[in-house]
Image (tube, rainbow, N blue to C red):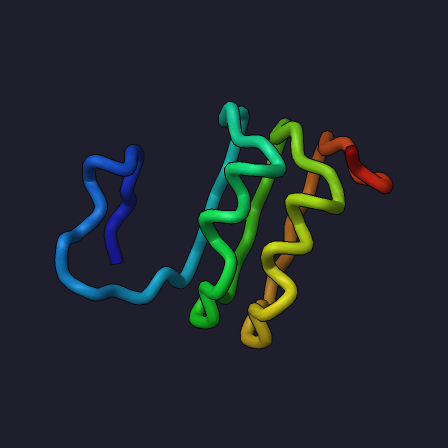
Length: 79
């Protein structure tokens, strides 16, 4: 696979997203909705990402998720 650092780098043809690494990124609960329905996701890593349970709920359909790594997040009921 390849690393994509910005939305502009996303391929124009259909693709499967296998890993998401969010480290010190300005992502929000609302922004995490972008990942809803990513059923091929196997790894989700978030470090210092200001996301709550509301944002994580967008990954509830990721049945193939093998690794969930969360560090320094604001996990709780959310807003």
